[in-house]
Structure formats: structure tokens, C-alpha cells
Length: 249
View (cartoon, rainbow, N blue to C red):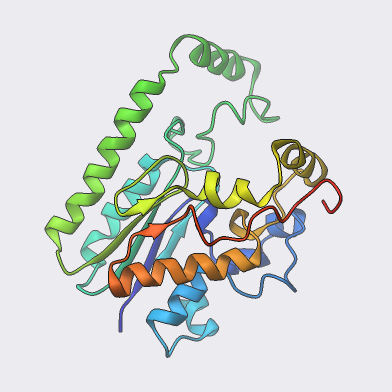
């Protein structure tokens, strides 16, 4: 039996997340999200799959909201010796501008988004404001992102029989076209104003893994097609788009 491993950010939290307080606060509809793309991939690669088994095997999905690629890399390499040939490993990359700034606060990696964090002291906010003004370097972020990809690709060299997929949340990655944010998540809105109003109304994204349920099934099919037939994952086509308009948000 192939073992499924998933590492990533909020695009990759498991279906069991729905039982947590944050999911309830975000008003994710459990009547709609009875599955997610990870669970569907598990079903397809392991026909003997069952939800009870999946829930009990939760450590195979190692993901967290708001984390950085450094955190993901650490989790992957800590688990490397547990990988077996023929396992399926999905490394869902996050935004290159996120970094593991605070050792014990791995979810606080997106400085721009969290500048108004209520728990941050005045001194911490001021230090971050100065960092963003004087030290933020997009070129450095891109170089680090590329270095991360080369590090992950080394796993394919070290273990050629391992089924490894790099799935980009932002940016690009080998053997994929497009990314989850631009081509799936954001494309569900008919325009940027609708998207702004949606988040203003909901405060938290009420879509599990930032996508509607139909797109979970589509993503799972594309991921499995990669594992079975080595077909590159095209995130730019085939997904349901323009779901949300000003009239229905």
C-alpha cells in the first residue's frame, strides 16, 4: 500500500481540521465539506481507504496555517527516514515572502498580513515595520524559494522510487503549471472587488483549503493523474471559476 504524506500550509490542512474551533469560527460548512482533496487522493491511491483509518493516521498530513517554506522543509527532512519507496509525498509550497521569523511562533510568518496582530507589543510592531521598510527583499525571497525547490528535488535523487509532487501555493514549481492561489482560489471570484467584499464579509475564508468543494475533486484528480501517469499538474485549466459574484457572496 502506498502511504500518502502531505506537507504544507492552509491549502493542505486535513479534513479533521473541521472539528477544531478555528474552523467553526470561520463557519466552514461541514455539510458541504464532507471530504477534501487530500482525502480524495488517499481514496484513489489506496482503495482500502476509510475515514477512521485516515483520521487515526493524521500525522501523515503535516500542515499548518500561515507557515513558511522553512518550516515545511524542516518537517519534510525530519520525516525523510520514514518515507518508503512507492510512497506518495506532496510538498505544498507556500508564499516566498513568508519566513520562520519567530522560533516558537511558526504560524506568524506573514509579516505584512499580521502587522496588526493584537498580541504583538509596540516594540515588536515597530521592529517589523522597520524590517518591511528597509530589509524586505523580494529578490532574496525568490532566491530562497528556488533553493528550497532544489532541496526538495534532491529527495527524488536520494530516493528515485518515491512519488514526489511539489504543489505551489504561490509561484511556480517543477512538473506543475500555475499555482493554487492565482489559478484556483482567486479564480473562484469574478473580479477582485468581489473577492475583497467576500473576505470583508466573512473575516475568515469559509472555504476549506481556500477552494469550493467541486475544485477539491478536480485537484485530487489532477494530483492522482500525476502519481499514476506522471502527467504534469495543470492548475490553470479545468477548475470551476467565477463561482462568487457580488450577488451571491
